[in-house]
Image (cartoon, rainbow, N blue to C red; front, side, top):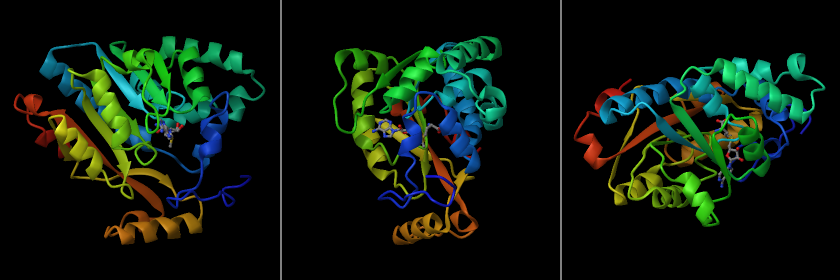
Length: 289
Ligand SMILES: C[S@@+](CC[C@H](N)C(=O)[O-])C[C@H]1O[C@@H](n2cnc3c(N)ncnc32)[C@H](O)[C@@H]1O
């Protein structure tokens, strides 16, 4: 991969970004995604914040433990704890700021940043990612409070991993469903049982969410899709990627007009709550925001 025009495509028709997920520090991740105008964590943030407020009100609980699935280098953690925008993160890791810095220097800088910028100290964020390097960086830099580096699609969590996955109040994801399926979600539910965390997943329209909705229903959850809008994820890297994704959407019977046809991936937001909680508050205002 040398330019935006020379990405390989994976089997889903998306460009293959696996090589930026597993670097010792996040610089390559941010420089590549900045070129693609990757924005989903920022557009997801107000939805997450709204759910966090509702959860705090409903449960009368200030401190929240969030599990971020496919957390990478702790992007959602940084954004939610410090109320940052993607442009902040792109600048923090951009060549103008950290060119030539050693990994350990970046970690020291990030620890200080998180300490200085934190706006919601009631949030504890733990992460799950199959990338060992990303989890190691995010935990060493204190972006994550704890992390699990495993692939729950193929493996069961160890007892120590299950302990870190447990106790979640809210499970979130951006850009990860597609890599993970109901198999990962089921293991997260098992690790948290009998507690039932709320969930908010942002999912590209090309990846049906039905199987996850069905699995959650078996565990006693109600799932609603935010109906009033779709959420920009990033622009297509190449014409070939655009062509492949439009073809896939067409095969799923999804009209790309006004959305992907304009050159950007669109995600949908799915909010899942245990049935017993849905009786104490109305999901409708959340899904019509
Ligand atoms: C597009 S990135 C999204 C990262 C972050 N959530 C964001 O929005 O910036 C997808 C992430 O999913 C992770 N991933 C891929 N397969 C996974 C799996 N089986 N389990 C957990 N994470 C996985 C990748 O390592 C990568 O960090």
